[in-house]
Length: 336
Image 1 (cartoon, rainbow, N blue to C red):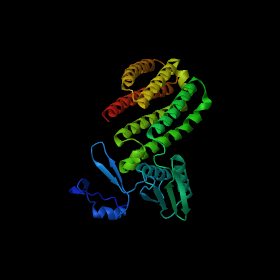
Image 2: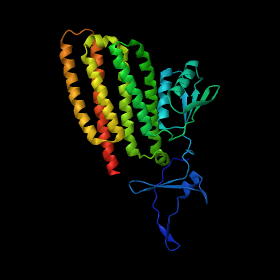
Image 3: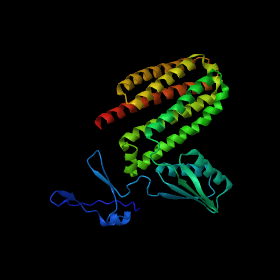
Image 4: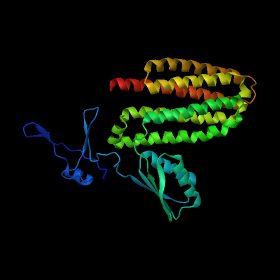
């Protein structure tokens, strides 16, 4: 479909004594393939406008094919480009090797396919690889995706606390689960970008773009907490040895505040969020003071201690950000 926009003024006319009609722009009907007898979908918007979509079924998404020419650059560059295209909402990606696709580049393409939701390699021949979105748009709602993401992040953070208590065998598993968090975060970002251009998808998901953006923000906060959980797992037991029991206490308090923050967001409770923000900022202040006072002294393993406290402080900060997002979302609901 041609993506050109049309801005025209049309006069509303009356026919049959009571029916109001308006004609459709000829160029638009030609671009969309509409003919007499074709069905269209009408959707009223919160601002009073009306969206006319030529496709009555969300499964009939217009294909958005991106062609990526890959030279002999670093393989990591190819992976980043594929993720970037994925996030924009493209439905197909054709990768063309210039002059050919190397073994390493093909590995990066397969890695991309395993790191995202929905995209699979459907054709692979010569110096070209075609990836296509085989998922069902709208099958996973924003709320369900964020809720699933939170469950993984919470488990990662809880296991990271166990690591600094002495369970070193959990470290690699925590880092592996970070991939699942990234996958969900990218999926949420992609779905948000897609619904900006596809109002039928927004309707199927029963959410407006102005509400979905809050889920996108929270998903990003959770993804960052997951990254910090990996940092905590990476330094392992040394952080616990360096800090007595106070680091563990602050880490457990941060998890408690994260739990309350996510409960407030998922249940859209602004009053609960306000109290949690106060608790979070109070704990954040205490954690910073403890870090500053302890670091001035001769602390064992100062690097590990610094990383552990930085992870806790950032987790507390992101948790209060989630609470603020919950407040914004709850008032968006009231307004809606």
